[in-house]
Length: 140
Image (tube, rainbow, N blue to C red; front, side, top):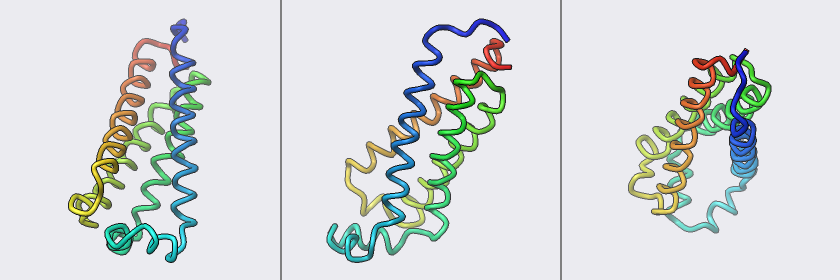
């Protein structure tokens, strides 16, 4: 295992924090009651009703895989790469559920698009970082 750069741990910690926030959001979303959804307005109510039942599972895979993958980066483990790929797959599947199948493209706000775009970019960046770490021998 080669010497990893000093910036790898802070970046992995930032990725871990990001995914832990995602876990909080996922759990909060899973606990949202129909009354709370209705209070968000008719567009959000329609979006939630149209969401495929498997979409929250994809979100869970995305955030839990991201947490485990970032922990793997911190521990300099090769399995981090596979878990971060799994996390990215979860993000893509949740986006398909939200924006394609549930009609979120017409119902979601601009903020939702921007946030999901950031989620996708971070997931891709973490995969690229893990692949680089594996290629350069930073992971054992």
